[in-house]
Length: 499
Image (cartoon, rainbow, N blue to C red; front, side, top):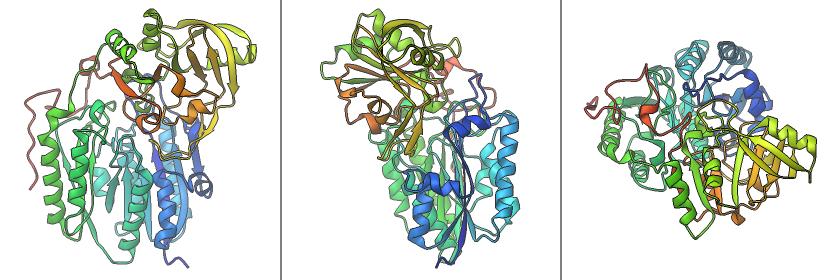
């Protein structure tokens, strides 16, 4: 019989403040919005940290008390109404949960509302006010978190993902469950220290299977091995949120000794700061990138549409790369576009029908122009697909709405979805009867995150600096709230460790 009751709460959204759209409660409902026991039904057995919390409950012998969990595809800031409703849902859930021995709190770390730049800190504050100053709250965060002092001061310990692509989410959830079980039982007394660095690590260098991020991962593991250390994390930051806390951070958690935590955090922060110059780099232009990809003889080649990164909040309907592929007269490409209008036209025409469609670039003027295609409707789908393996995002059940597949005379395969979907799973296309291994060029609407899935078929990855909501061109967006100076925006930025 479990000897403790631990509340489970999750609110995860990456909020891009440079897009015109806002995020509503319905956007969360389209992905997952679970209150009470539905949380357990949805997340048990998944590779998400919420699944890790539930695995940890069984492993460490506590009763999970499901309260609230909401996850949405990255997009614009939350509407104020949605933010207030979610906070009210969480507060009510905590009140209704009865006596709790602790809280496991899964947040993203980069959630913004139109009326609140630090949604994660606001949620932490509200939960802390409800449970009092002594109840343990263990927080998990995405690796791409902008960590505020409010988030740290209101929690007992923090655990962030360590890998990109994020294939360790469930493991970090289990870690957090172990920390809270040991804390409640009096085996440890976590204390944590936050170090913030005036720097940004560009996402094109975030693959922890490669340098320089691989060195960050090794250093993190070295800190965790230190005597007295409970956990250590690096927050790589989320650049598309123009907030005061945007930037790199380090969090170290020690057992009862703040100085041990501070020494560990400062050592790790110095290591990260020392390799800051390795986290910048140039990408080829659209024309150059497509020519380089087309010249590679071992195929498929996966081309990352960096400026239309759905997992960074972009719309997923940019035609810039696909247009260039057609301009260069290339064949046999695969592209997924968010285009509910075109998907509906295909459904009206029916499977096997010949169609002429104008696809993509319908959400704004930064992601190319609508492209005219001709072909036949190969497949229509309800858009549901299942991913059994650990993949970036940690989800198993996925839904991209009514989906159509159009084959063109040039052997291009164009997938048209009715809901935005980040390319984290090969099942997104395999479930539609597409064999990605047979394509020459595959355009993915993300940067590093798809690699966990696409390594199974890709012979090479090519990153292209496309325009759009998530472009790597730092001069293309204007920040009003970030810290200054900050590397690489300003070369004269300096870091002074707190120890």
